[in-house]
Image (cartoon, rainbow, N blue to C red; front, side, top):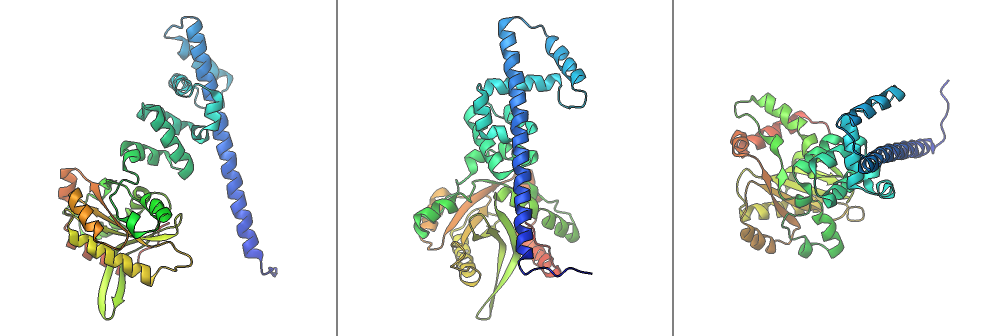
Amino acid sequence: MTAILPSGYAQTLALLVRRAHEARFAVQRKANTEVIALWWFIGHTIIERQQAEPWGSGVLARLAADLRAEFSTMKGFSESNLRYARRLAEAWPSEDTVRQQPVGELPWSHTIQLLDKLEDQHLRDWYAAQDAHHGWSRAVLQHQIATRLHERMGAAPSNFASALERADSELAQQLTKDPYALDFLAIDSDASERELEERLTLRVVQTLRELGAGFSFVGRQVHFDVDGDDFFVDLLFFNWQQVRFVVVELKTSKFDPRDAGQLGFYVALVDDRMRIPELHAPTVGILLVTDKNETVVKYSLAGSTQPVAVSRYELTPAEQAKLPAEETLTRIAAEVTANGEPEVH
């Protein structure tokens, strides 16, 4: 016999599920902190002992072997990790600092990436904070460091300051990067249409990763009928952190002032047809081009009343040569949309 559920059951279940997820995440972070604190203590102890008396080259290997023997069920007590522990204690000299800063919330493998890939301590702290805030995977952390996210974030030229209210313009600017690292868009020119369809669909996930935190895919070639004329927005996203639609146009050519006008038209269209003013922040647009003249961009954006930004995306010359023509991408994208495509979050 099926129980009759009260009217508020679904909301109660959702509340408990969310709380359980929060508790599990809090436990995971606390566990990470204790693990990092342990490695810090090991590293700090090694530094103290090495300063007090000479340690030969084989001492760390012996220490690692003895720790593995004592804790046979624990993984990680390798000579390599002991060296990383020493570097951790050198980078963050105080245990309190390790516990209180974002690095203390990260998995040990992420901390190793910070130590290996970055020499500047300020950058280590910056990437640790971004990692802890966004919950990156190790692969995402590696990607962000390799593509120098700290230089690219919020760097795209835009007219947000004049087209949006000040507080909102600062938030919207954070959505931009310059340049975008879109190496994954390189496609063999002899690939079949079916292969291109599959790759374009699969790469939505990579696109979301590169766009940044909070982006959800809404659609490709989103159709609008304007008094009998048809218009298609290439890529439409929704950023749930800022609660706004983001129109993205991808061009396989150098920036042309007409591109800004077209993007501004699409932004106005989405803002009028899809945005709910009481719920959503103003729609913004991001134009991605292979190259741009900064002065031309400046004058073009000054003449636009819609909030748009212009950024480059980076590909090597060989990768650029593999890109299909823009008309081919548009046609294939339209066919993919017509055949149906799952929403990606």
